[in-house]
Length: 305
Image 1 (cartoon, rainbow, N blue to C red):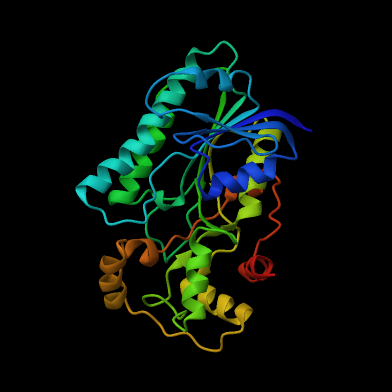
Image 2: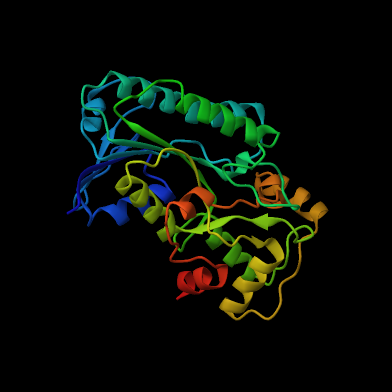
């Protein structure tokens, strides 16, 4: 066992499960802070909190090796005023609460990673966006990211190193985007979406987990990091890769007008598919991190294997 304790706030979703399974053999215990009770599994236990108020859960942070904050309502919904308010509150309240508690602890976590989003950068088809030269975009999803990172930086935590991890689209078997794209392919509807020219900045779930360990093991790394594979692909290319790996010879394309109609029907926003996210992990690569799944073909093959 390399570590004593890893804490995952809001860790009962897809990425939380990926991280819990990754760390269970590398740490003495994994603690998930969740609104819902859950039975202990192996060395993974759940502690209840409401994400709004202090309670017994604060003792779990004492001297933890790492806290990863994954709190936030899924943005895969219509941007109604009610949903917008919930998207903001579910990110800002827990993040500010964690910052306040960490500031006040005598022995706080050594590292606090806040999982934010690579969608903070502008729609980019002209050049890639990295931590140093990337340009912040505009619109609701960018406002969410900006206020989220501001909440993360609100409190000084001199004893706790902080990393804002701007996560790309995580690809894996169990949940997230990939099973939904695969379902389209199975139905013969796995063609390009929109004009297919928009970039997809993705990361294999195993590399997403490995990134957090790399940051934990390198105590001089802090600040903003992009967590995306070094080879983003265009939407049309990604859909072709999935079709080929699955053995589906064709896929009907979905033009922009159809996506906008369909997104209303299924209760989501077409921006999630049509925005071009061309993001590079410059700081991770500069620090010496090597991706196990650097290209989409290899990642998709592994997921389907």
